[in-house]
Image 1 (cartoon, rainbow, N blue to C red):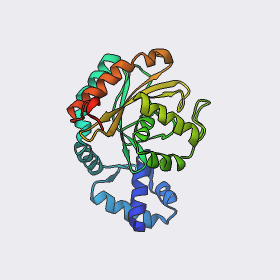
Image 2 (image 1 turned 180 degrees about the vertical axis):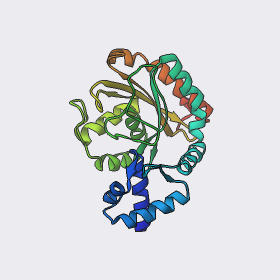
Image 3 (image 1 turned 90 degrees about the vertical axis):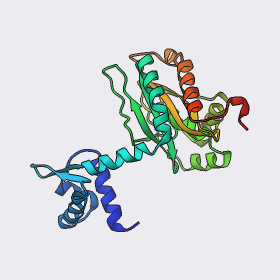
Length: 252
């Protein structure tokens, strides 16, 4: 990838965190302000960024339009949408849809809970590979060799006392997930959040996405979150059926 493209992508990623001044963006790139300004001017022409009256830069409408087109091209997101909305309405809890892309798990849809407390997650954000239910579901569906390769490359950062600490522990849990058909995040990414996840399958029978329900423990204790599992499994079965997945007995 050329240096110019790399720098432009870094600018967009930085602006994804919030508005920035020219000085701040130049510092992020480690370049002179004139170099950063030339890049920003090119991005402005394509409406990927815009500068406000206070000379601060923001992500622009062109990028949002491109993002919308990318989302429209995700067939599973369109198929899943009414089912996710129904699950969100029935449970009142935060519902996520995530997909595996090039060694990463990315949130591709989200329905917020009815409660005041909001999850940190957002569409486009990567999920932790060793401490989120959606990632465990998707990694568990990988062929064993690829599963081991991906796990070997994970940085096992401890976020809470419950976070999985190393590759052997994760591989053992992924084997359990593959056998039982669902995964959990028992306060592994955030101490006050519990989560359950299950796979969505397409006509190939492989997991093309994962759906999760995430709940703060001030709303429901862990045991009651597990009590939502039947509704989650019903939802992923319905999405999978609409995506053309074979019945369990038909899977090879």
